[in-house]
Amino acid sequence: MAKPRYKPISQEYARLMEQPFPGDPLHRTGAKLLTQRVFKSAMEGNLAAAVEIANRVEGKADQSIDVVVEDSAADVYDRLRLMVRKFRGELPEHVIEGEEAHSGREGQVTE
Image (cartoon, rainbow, N blue to C red; front, side):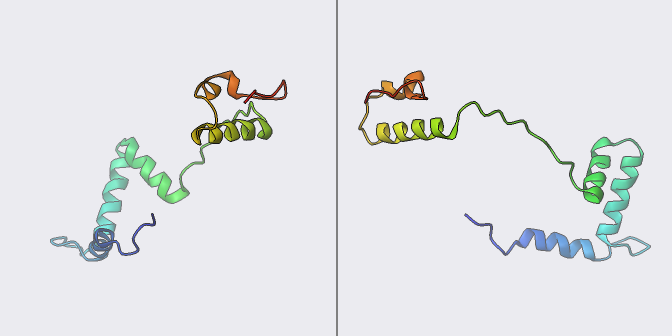
């Protein structure tokens, strides 16, 4: 399901951030005050504030993941085919429970 294009809360925050903050003698915008306060907090040792600034300025750091593939595409296809047949009621329940489902290249599962 797609996100709605109209985001009333986000739009209201954006509007407020662009306006001068009430009571500020220097007539700074909400965005200006917020960024100054987060920056000051980071400089005082607030790690979360420092991370927020770094992410905004440099972008979030890339995260890597290791992927280990133990099965060939043919093995995966064979198991998926068996699962579909089981779902359709064409195979007994025990066929998919363990290694019996894995036909591999050693031999075929008797169906």
